[in-house]
Length: 302
Image (cartoon, rainbow, N blue to C red; front, side):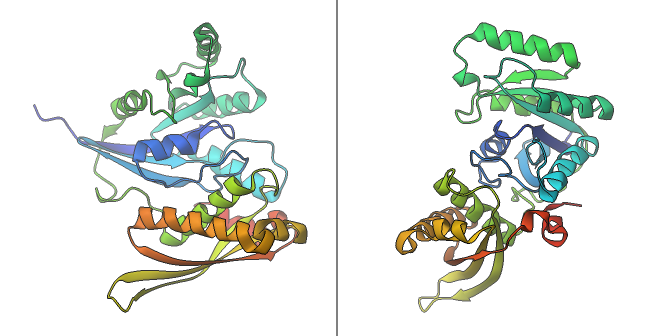
C-alpha cells in the first residue's frame, strides 16, 4: 500500500542560544537562519522547508525567548509565541547542559500548555553532557511539566539523532499537499538572505565588541552580465548601529573588519544562491533604532 503524503508547519521555539537556528540549518542542509552566539540573532520567524520522500515539513525558526529590553525585543517575543498556536507541531528546544527548568523555559511551557499543540521536546547539546544521569534527571523534570509527544536528545552541531527528530515530526503530521516547490528550501527573499547573512557575519566577527543592536538593509540589488557572459548580482547593503563608537569598531582599522564581514558574507551568499555576488557594505549610525516603531515593525511577520 502506497504511503500517503503528509505536510505541515512546525514551530521551533526555545530560549536564546539553545541552537534553534543550527538545528534548522542542519535539517535543511542549506544556510537559511543566522547563527551566532548572541541574543536576537534570529529576529524574524524564518520558514525553512525540508522535502522528504513522503512529506514536506515547513519549519518556522522563531526568535529566542529572552527578557525584553526594547520594542524590538517585545515584537520578537510576540512573534515567537504567536507561532505556537498557528502550527501543526511544536518542537521545544532546550539546552541539555542545564540542570533545571529556568524562568524562560517555564514561560514557554506555559504558552505550550495554553495552545495544547502536539509538542516534541528536543534536548540539544547532549554531546556536551558529561554525566548522562544528569540528562535523565532533566528529562524527568520536563516530563512532569507536560505530556510531550516525544522526547529526542540531539546534537545539532554533530547532527546526532536529527533523522529521529524528523521521523517523530513526520509521524505527527496529517495528510496534505506540498505547499512549496520541491526545489525550494526557504521562503525568504533574496534581500532577506543578504541581510541575515551580513548580520550573522558581523555578530560572529565582532564577538562582544558591539552589542546586538545592529540591523542590515539591502539598498540595491541588480543582476547584470559580465563581459564574459557570466551572470552577477551587484548588491549594496548598509549596516546600521546605535552609536558612533560602534561604527568605528565595525569598520575596523583601515576598514579591515568591514572588509572581512563583507568577504565572508559574499562567500556564503554565492554558495547559497549559486551566483557571483559583487557586494558593497557601508556602516551608518541610527541612534535608538531599537525603540523606533517604524523600524522594528519590519521584523514582525504576518
